[in-house]
Length: 146
View (cartoon, rainbow, N blue to C red):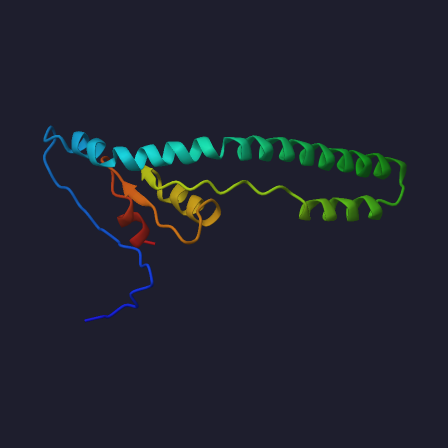
């Protein structure tokens, strides 16, 4: 028996599997019990809309700067001029590339293993765990085969 410190909060993990024939109302039950979690995901997406808009604007500005420096490099190359200063500017700009905001998303439904792995690596807050939900194909068996 493990005894935890009463002041610590520990996450609870549930691993659930529903097996039933077609037409047995699996999707209906899933929608009913996942409603509040799906609402949370929608609320989080709504809360982060301003951050996403800011990110898209910042990324567009950054891409324009990159394009401008690349144009200067091409122009200097055509003239046979030294491009090292522009190349250094381009390297410096690469460090300033805006980072896409990490929007908490609890539910991943019918996703591919590749998309799930990418999102967990690049978009997922470290201290949270997602819910995997699939009705069409196994997701986890693909991961275990790798």
